[in-house]
Length: 124
Image 1 (tube, rainbow, N blue to C red):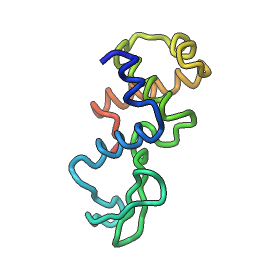
Image 2 (image 1 turned 135 degrees about the vertical axis):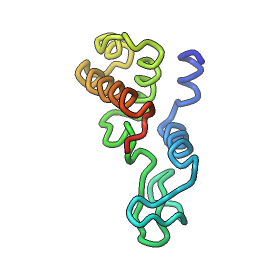
Image 3 (image 1 turned 60 degrees about the vertical axis):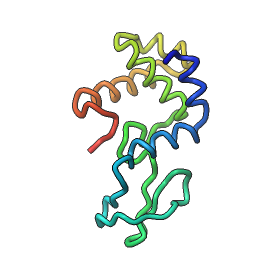
Image 4 (image 1 turned 30 degrees about the vertical axis):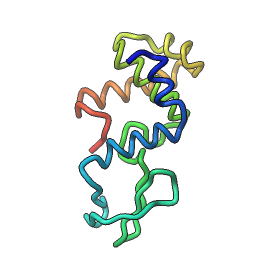
């Protein structure tokens, strides 16, 4: 997949959230608080709410993207660029994404740590 194809597939926050939700709950939903497996739609897009304890979990919760302070589309693009070229500098990422260099450095560091520890972007 090339960058332009990737950008078209993940061109909006909604598409990114839809993808994250699909990956996160691919094997089914299980509430982190009570362990219940039934859910309904949450208040936020692509979030799920436990029908027993009413705990809501967003698609980004417990993932690399939880608490991300820049757009999800930029975070996905940064992830794509780092996975394609792990040696890419934070300065180059900053220039390509038009984001602060330190933001790119921190997110790249977090991404690399997740991949090394878990082999995935989900945090346990």
